[in-house]
Amino acid sequence: MRCSSDWSGVSFLLERSVQRVAGMTFTMRWRATAAALTVSAAVLSAQTPITPPKNGYTPAEDVQLGREAAAEVERQVPLLSDKQVLSTMAGIGRRLVNAIPSELRHSEFKYSVQVVNDADINAFALPGGPMYVNRGMIEAAGREGEAAGVMAHELAHVALRHGTAQATEATKYQLGGLAGAIIGSVVGGKVGSAISQGTNIGLGTVFLKYSRAYEKQADLLGAQIMARAGYDPRDLAEMFQTIEEQGGLGGPEWLSDHPNPGNRYEYISAEASQLRVKNPVRDTRAFEATQERLKGMPRAPKTQTR
Ligand SMILES: [Zn+2]
Image (cartoon, rainbow, N blue to C red; front, top):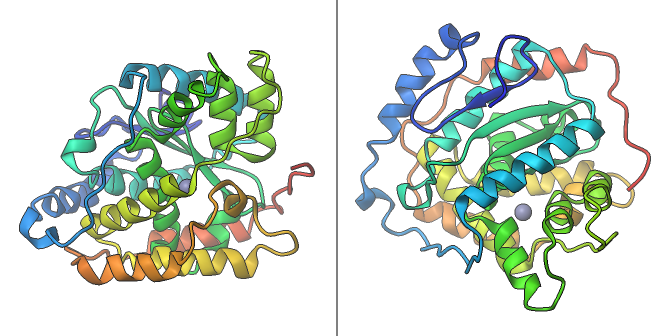
């Protein structure tokens, strides 16, 4: 668990805050989130059931792999240390984490949010909980719900343990022993490639993206988590359009790492129509202030390689 003393990042656990620096700011939201947890199952009964894929790893192994990959990531990427930005994104992250369905919670997992000072529209999350959101993603979001949508999608991959599930599948094809390659693959892009190679397990640039089936699961569970957290899941569908529009030539990295399973906008919208948003988040001023603050900072570098 990273500590808050130098505000190098923000970490939090299910059920309790460990972030003291921002404690004052979060008190009200924390209570609001607790209220959101009282959403009855009946209200959400129309949601699509999501079953985690087969997994040969333990949740503790997810945590261990994620921790090793996080150490590598943090050697590779520039992290922002701005308190206001981090506390805002941690607040959104905590709200979403508290909305993960109870059957998909793992007590070992330690969720955290870091902001990467990179202009690319991207975000990724590692097994066991560490999440990295690019500054470019926050700036591109049309509103808080869109950023929350991407984060909810990433959290869904973590909660469903897709990274190690994919590793489990890959071992069937004799790729064996491949934590680094798999983690590199689920992070994707240049950082993922560096992790794959940096872990030196002999697979070099083996590069597996999340399967389309996993993408669809993350979209649907992400939509469900959003509704439980007070966000309109339609914002997730909107964010995909925002990403496509703003991605520029070649498209943003996020979409190449999270391929469209097909009809993404339509099935997320259909799921959204089955979900009721409880205790909707109305005060998004902190997020808007964060976007303004980022715009006022020196331009984020855009990483050169893919
Ligand atoms: Zn994905």
